[in-house]
Figure 1 (cartoon, rainbow, N blue to C red):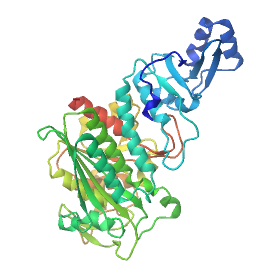
Figure 2 (cartoon, rainbow, N blue to C red):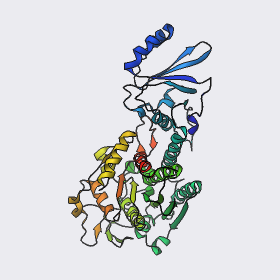
Figure 3 (tube, rainbow, N blue to C red):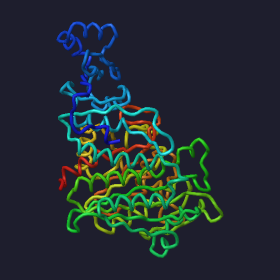
Figure 4 (cartoon, rainbow, N blue to C red):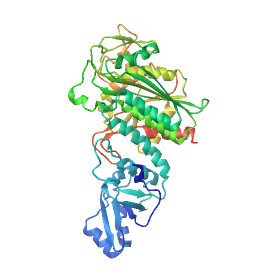
Length: 457
């Protein structure tokens, strides 16, 4: 995958010129007459997604790529599949096209999930002189890790296999990984994680990864790791269950962020906390109306077993808060309400930290990682009241479902600055740099903030 970004130029590479409609005519006026006539005859207008090769006697063909209005470098993220296979070197592009972003977008668009079938064709490969190839590759390796995990069906990515992926990540960067599984979750006080996963033949577990100097600023990252979500006894309809292999997308996104942090050598003490479970159905499945004790000590009334993600996150957030982090970040494929509010492409986030929110919005815009702040609206707290427990885990109203889910999680997040993402982690309809399938959302923006704050090795 990362070999799609070539380390050095060579004479056989096809020179690539990226053009916009505004600069096409001046470019043609400077081009050899025969070449310009050929471009005009083919009707090339430099629209986004247009691509063509121009033969040249005794030399590699010249490649043209349309960028449209060039406002968004990531709009060229499907160039690796639009251009014919072969090696290219970027010779010209408008100044508005950021070379570093283009390198990453090229890699992101070249990704393919090939565990079960080969890709139909190889991606075009490119050398971009002004780009930091190593930085782009590090980011893409983290994105590919998350995408591969999300795309893998639950038959092959059960709770044990997801833990194995965390163990492999830890070995790669010299981190310490520990796990608590099965009945040990009860003896070590993770009752909500145990309850959600106890009906499956694949044991639920809490997996933790620790990396970095002990006296460095402490960053906790938490990710929802439901490897498959039937909905439990409140079983999902078939059309909603079809994609539930992606319900561990929060854990995959959290792992991608951890990968970026460790690969860049940020000066932090990283604590990755992943509650992992299979929300299955059997005779011992937890039930609507059950009252469960949480790690924090709050009693939780279960309203709907298909809202299992916030239960496992509650215990994981409480665990992370015990280490007194300087910042706590969680990723979860939590609510359909978030998709109703913002659709699949915008990542909603919640935080009470105004400075962090502003910094994150700016970073998201700069690195083309779209996100949108949602409100932690205190007026909806009463919707979580329970007549029999400290709190009900779903609201008494179907409205503002993403907001009330965030308010539930806030009860367990402690006093540290907290950032919560309610993501989709899936691309239903492919778009540039985002092939159909699993994806990361908000991770690059968060990493940009952390990199500015904590530097690199």
